[in-house]
Image (cartoon, rainbow, N blue to C red; front, side, top):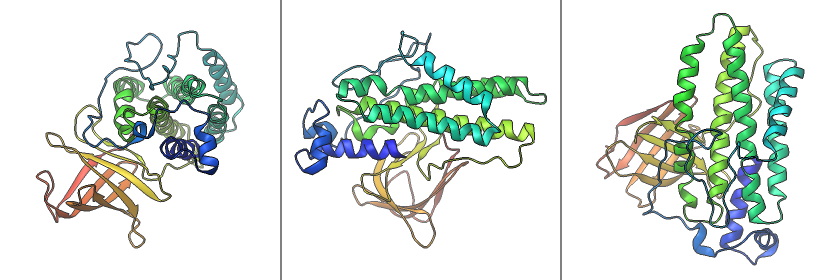
Length: 316
């Protein structure tokens, strides 16, 4: 994702300001020093069961420099985004075309955020991606409600339960930036990606009900995602790393300490080869839309045994 790459460059700029174009990017932000973007292995990832939506009771999502806006608080782009999404839905040839246009709309607001002159402005604009995909998800829900044969009550109940944990997942996925000045932006970006993933799932369900056999997803997020039970402490997090082709991985078995490390793609199997930060565990990670598997090769961790495989059901 272009936005993800931009934020990785921005994080690097905050850490290594003063060298070439990276230093120029850093100059557009209110820097707080190298320590802002250090990995904090001892920090708790934090959790919240609330969301940042209109009428809800969400905990604040902030960076050190300013507070990200709440939708519904007279935020200037929310009504515009809602109208743009409605226009796309009305004009799209099919659901595949619709998702492609929504992705383009998301890119437009990403570019606006990336062109921000200050970090305060970036913090203000970072909510737009989430608003785009939330509006699309809600539009898809409305159409599922109208579609004969859709088990809408079950779908909507699951959506409501999932939505309560979007902020929790987004915060947990932003653990690498905890305490940094761009943490709020990263959290909002991860929240947007959760809504994007949900919109893709809802669109797929609607396509099946409408008989759109040519339906396909316009983009792929690769292995990145939140795997496991969002309502518990049993989860696996995979996010893009600072280096191309690398991934940051956090494994949190329920009732056990979290395990942090990094992974790269194994050329033979296509799986991710994971090594913990302390070097005391290695494993192959198999990631797909319905979940992820961890096949342990070496371990002295209490939660994992060498030679065993462990599952984290579904990806959010």
